[in-house]
Length: 339
Ligand code: PEP
Ligand code: MN
Image 1 (cartoon, rainbow, N blue to C red):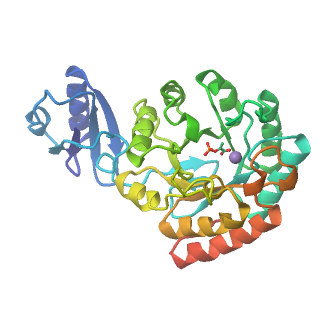
Image 2: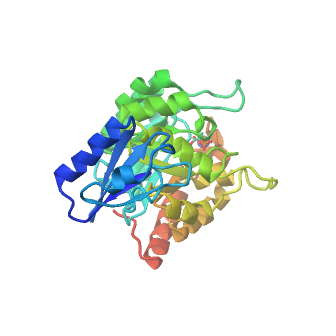
Image 3: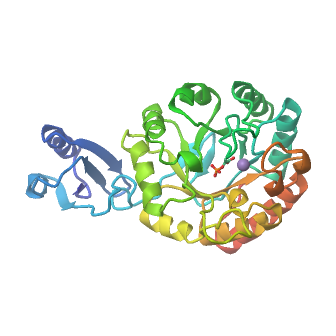
């Protein structure tokens, strides 16, 4: 349940409710909005009566959240959550663009791509060091060496970086370099990993499982939020359907549905949805028009030589064209692409 404090409730009244939550054996989570403070009572609160809080000073109302996710819901946090990353604000009105290769392959490749995406207008550099590949015989990423190269690209361009973390034991190592830690589609329900990232308290981009519902995505986000780490960005990257033309089916409806049900930012990855570079720009523009807070796009200077996902990677010049068109669509829907 959530305890909604009156507009103008005092610090003491809020503290009294927080103490009561502890006394009853629950965990309080505070959401301090511009108008009022909301206190989430987290745990199995079914046995307690609303009046336990309703009759306390400064309390406006007590609301039971019927959805299985609580902290991720807009009931708990009515305003948009904004995740600041080195001056870039994800979840604000502007559209944030994350771009880079699927995998870090070499020093030259990541430095060249980082420079190119920066010049084209990207705000954040992506690049996988640990790659979750369907086949154990495919390129698995450069691992620690890949992280070092990402750090070099970050220093050279000033772009913040996002990279995937696949296991709880990799978290400290990846956190040394990454400004955002990415959880891939295959790990959305790796609960040990989600707990580790919750405890870490750093920004996380959580990709929707390719066979997961939106509610399951929100429940996974809830694992991270339950640790008090609210810096979670959701990512729609396509789901599996009967349609084989595209690699996955971009569930564009996830954008307005998630924007309504949760306060967390929603980013779209058009590359893994399309599976072919030819369709990436169209899906990107659709995502912006639908209200996405950002895009995560794969870019490679030589897609024909890429060690993973070459077919869906844009060449830098095509990416620059995509960004130009993204600006036009953003403007048409009252948004901006900064830079
Ligand atoms: C990736 O971003 O490179 C990736 C592996 O994506 P996904 O987890 O969505 O397949
Ligand atoms: Mn990829």
